[in-house]
Amino acid sequence: MRRTVSASSFWTKRTNCWVSDVCLIVDANAAGEFLAKSSAIRDWLGSSRGEPRLVAAGLLRRELARLSEVRRFLVQLDRAGRLRSADEHRLRREEERLRASSLCGSNDSHVLALAIVTGARTLATFDQALIDDFRNAGIVSGPRGSVYRDPGTHAHLLRHTPSCGVQSTGSRRRRRVR
Image (cartoon, rainbow, N blue to C red; front, side, top):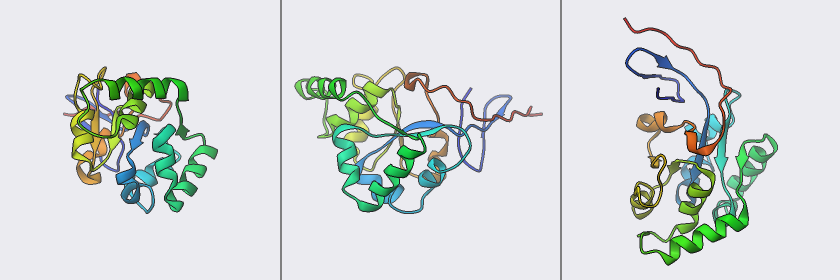
């Protein structure tokens, strides 16, 4: 069953599901678009339905905090329990492993390490090299990563995956399709 967040719904074979939760990583190059100003992601993270979570730790969190509006929003998310971090030691170890391998084509091993360590499998970014790495099953797997770029067509990507370890308590409405 697929899960989605938006004003619209996603239809599976016989059910229509609404769920408002996800572990999402927003790359620094997309933070101005999705976190610094009004956006579907920002509205969704501030909503009271489900358990949406922004994942930010290590170098990525420091990069995000460089934008003053994003820094203020991170504080709000942290106070609301919607900012998820990661163990710094495990994160550094994974970054080092990725840099030592020849798998990464991007210079964002810190973002990839965050996805691997936390299990978050949805990334908002405009960096094509990072997109290629994030979708590479040799780097991010179990399940593979999905990329959020366009609120109009990518709302279905805002969901928890089994790998992120967050159990949804959000409300679900199901309806049979005739």
